[in-house]
Image 1 (tube, rainbow over the protein chains, first blue to last red):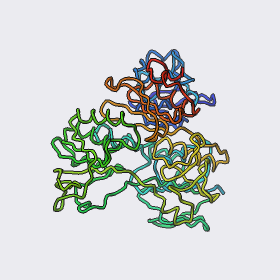
Image 2: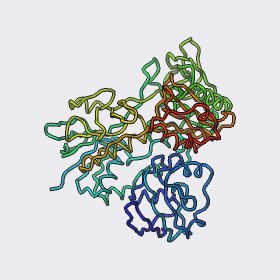
Image 3: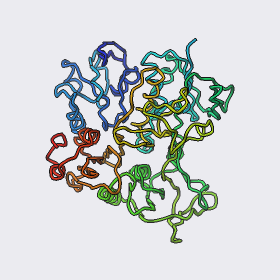
Image 4: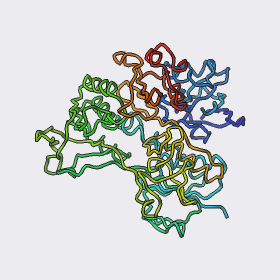
Length: 105
Length: 403
């Protein structure tokens, strides 16, 4: 388990203990955050879009080409912080990670 | 006393309805009735990662058992709903006492279309719709297995791709003259045929079948012309049918699916329906649809929940789908027709291209192959029913956002 701080679309911030070794999308889904994640983690739909807090961007790694190509077409895309949460593995190294769920499009 | 919401079916639409109800603060008693042995799960990986043995079954569950316990959802698995008595607001179950509801969501989904030909009941002939089906197929599918696949739609082709990866000898038999005939234009079909043939799949197009040979277990597929294809096992993927019988027997209106409005409401104010089993109006496309897709199940499950909560929201989206075969990610948005004009963006040889569909000049659908950047802008163009410039459209260097 590792700490995860999530700001929802309503602007509420919640701190949870998330299971590690699974994707960030799965952690958010398991904890009942409002995140569609329709394609189930296949990097096919961009409905699990989150913003990573600036301090954590480097630790969460880089976007792969597919992820970049999908994300950059969203109106809500932010070049520095946008990620598909299904493409980030939640690990102990990310203990304390802060993310914001992006608007639904 | 709090109300009771009964949900018949425990698939994607049902899971979404539960999630929306609870996350929006509903304190209703929720009873979820599913005829499979498993908690609600993600079906698309069945013909992909689960069949390939790349993921565990537990990975497919949308929520763990603890979620349903914590949220006070009474999940009844392995139980069938046998009848709906709308006058008494009661559902009869295969197991135990009937349950009564204040609101009912019918999310019964769909089932595979089955063949009824000589030999159709032989052992070794499989269909693929649920976890149990995949486990049975996996038990028999090994390197060197002679696998015959009947039907070259998404399921048939996804199974072919996985089976080749596992080292099986694969023949795909398709009655039409090209693969994915129902969902894609000729250039896309030809591209996928080439990919599968290069991967070693024997694709037989325009080929009807007349039955199966074998004593207890299948040994061969008999073709319409009298010839045979040897097979240790068969997977049949010839489409699905909506499960409307419960609703029909309950006197609800059925017209190629359970008839609902844009809020997932049936004609009975206490009964809603969501997912594959419904027929609903789509304001964007201006027609009624019965869709077989995750996107529809999720959005309609949510719509049903919001209606029950008294916060109705219109469901009107561009339908979208996806399919993974080999290294190819196919995304489809909109509903194309065989008479649509097809404009290619990029060269299929590069394995990264799109096919746009125009109807009277209006952008109505797209197939995106490994070309993710086209997908979301295309969905918007389709939603806006945009008339687009063909010469710009055919230039893959011009972003769809700039049309």
